[in-house]
Amino acid sequence: MDHKNPSKTAPTKKMPDMPNNDGKNEGEGNRSADRQYRENVSRHVKSGASEKAAEDARRAVEGDEADDLREAEQEGKSGGPQQARPGQGQREDQRAREDQGQRNQRQ
Image (cartoon, rainbow, N blue to C red; front, side, top):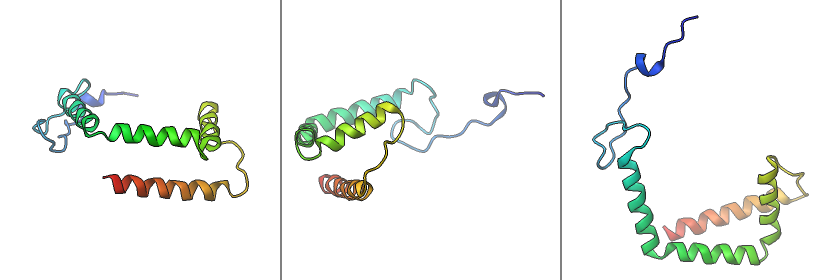
């Protein structure tokens, strides 16, 4: 079977137009994307939103969510879901909706 290198046979795809990339695919080590990322992180940190998020996280870890967060951490470390307790999925769905609502309000 003849395997061809797709990068040599397929046409180069144009990247979506984004600021400062002129639609060019810069590939790995994309300097435009790196610069844009760093500017956005800097803007985020200067806005003070990081401190608010850190405070929210501290409250969650120290508050009512602590047990659920530790359980989720262990689940992530184990590579699979733990057996769900009755009603657990509903609480998680409700919490996810509330978290999304709070994120939307901050934006």
